Length: 335
Image 1 (spheres, rainbow, N blue to C red):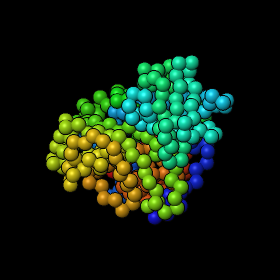
Image 2 (cartoon, rainbow, N blue to C red):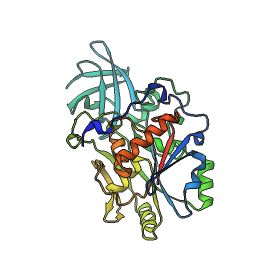
Image 3 (tube, helix red, strand yellow):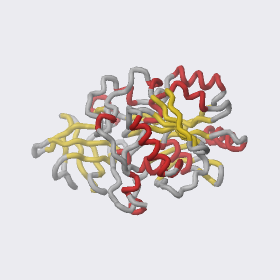
Image 4 (cartoon, rainbow, N blue to C red):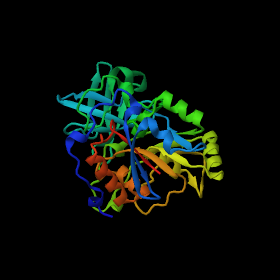
């Protein structure tokens, strides 16, 4: 398929710049694949579309303050976006700035420098820091909001899910941003069950597809994990014919990566799974997701799940009804 097949036009004012005061007040577009029907609701009404016994699978990753501002020793500003920890002092990063190649040293603070020790694709580098980085992140790092968000975020916790626990992401798994403790409690009382996975969101959140033939795109790997306890919960739901509902494309990618036949296995490692139309989902029965950028790998994944034309029709409906788009925007439930 061609990149242009996953393109749509979105006026800039539809891009949500700030989160709503109450997470669960986001709007919810519900698309039913069985009858091609569309309904409109609020996220706090999610229970209306679920069944007792449904298994919601959430991604417990936590966004680290991964954006670091630095300067070159020769002068000039630079920006570092942490992507993947290799060890206590070496990280895969994205570097913003001119002429920052192999051997270049960047000054972060009086006590911390970083040096480029390898060049990877595009602006991606391996950087070695002069001291272990994580103990300093709260002091030197900033919340890595997506480039289409231009307003300051007053509370960095609003770019975290309420169940974020495992530090490591360069971006939030945004489908989970709509949940509140009260909503999770009400769903549990109703009979919805929960399982957890972890996927640390990385480079592809920031790297657009540029190849016209999408099969030529090399998706970057992300680390994910399903523990034995959670694999058992997921497989029990599958065997009892209960729905497995992925909260977000990151969760869906993890579940499908760990699929062994029609069940999941315990998994911990890198995934390079690139889901595009034609892929047969083996684990995920339904999905909660946000509205994604044109031409993105995430739009391709939801198109694989619900059909490209169906998804683009839903997006046009959302635009016509003035939904809010992207990270701080509204949500979609695909049944």
